[in-house]
Image (cartoon, rainbow over all chains, first blue to last red; front, side, top):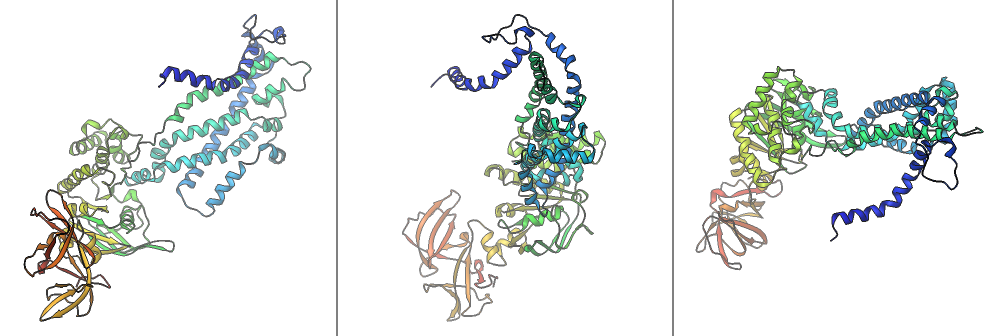
Length: 276
Length: 356
């Protein structure tokens, strides 16, 4: 028998290559972001730097209109997440609790939409948004992101809803609750873990989405973060890599914060111990 | 408190018919147990009384009011579920007070009612705990408490003890019965366990395949089962049933078994000579006979339980169990003679299963 410490060390050694592969881009990103400009391309490349320049972030913020893009991204991601949830929860509830004609078909349809990459639909979507007069409007992204994520959120929520015993709602009805009351006071509180998980996924998907944002948004002041950062690289004679990397760091941080704050809900299985 | 009347109630799921027309009158303050094998429709009937299943045809009345289309929340019925269905995100106190809070009662009234119920059920110490911190028996009590605080017209129990271990089940059985004797709320209790039914019920409704087989007090069902199904279902170990043909010779009616053995039966039997019948005798009604009386059987297995001994043997190839409270020392292979007093014999028609 190995001691616990020994075993832990062994496991970490086995995990190390994976950790390195995952962390390497982040390390490059971070190191580049805080370097002075003239140390960007030294040969041979080093991890070190002569000066830790926080100023890169401030310069980048002003030069690249980072604040505006950040607000755009926040608006799009939060609204899309909200919209997806507001529409998915009733849909998932119906799929989980009611029998209706075409239920199986609908489920398969949802699954099939997941097999298509948004890229193949970009042209069609663009023309649709043209007709709706929504090109160059952030709401076009809200609508498409919400729609693209809903298949996933409905499936995810529905399978979790299935695990919430019907008895609990029935007990609430017997206790004198209406369907709506039991939904709000009994059912939804128990579904919080699933709702949070789906919210995280939708938020991150929307936050990171690039192709649709690049297609729909024509003017620089409407760019979301991924497009804004891309615009600092593409089609330029001179790329300010330290600014690009500073922007990338700042774009990654909010997601990391949201994720670490909400991940406790991932683990909390509230319905455990509900019955039996 | 109120009576519950069920008139010609049927339940269909599409083409599948689950209840074929149930008529039942549950009197005010009565404790009625619906018992039957799984799939007999007893839970469906209970859920129809609760309003959780729709009524396909017929009427359900609480008191004088037809409640077919009244939603569950307006029926003033409390229900204890098989798996308790405690709200996991609420404390015991919140679980028990939920219905009262929904009715917007004053805080101090709610508090008094919850604490009274907790007192009755010995839950005082657990009010602040969450359901998952409780044992099975305690959760069961909370589920009861949730029903108790309501002062509902009718209590419904859907196999509330089936998730408990055997010992706790016996304890809770007695507690529920004592509670009913104290509160006298009209109760309908569903179980598949005939012992639960026998011990708790004022009246038992035996159901099978969507129909009522017999309604009666526990001892009525035990002593005079209306048909073979009830005879077999009620009692443990169950009644010995042996197939044969009714015959008569020299003024004595008897059942002749396939191997020629003749079991004398009293004349009260309303069957006709030559009719195929089933002879029934409860295990504890067999007596040891001496001389030529009774029939000879070979002992196969002897099982002492302490309170009595169970002797297994065969009569015309059919397994027979006899229970004796005396401490006989039978050996396997030994031949003994068994007899049944005439008034303890049950006779059923072999075709219809109806008592003769």
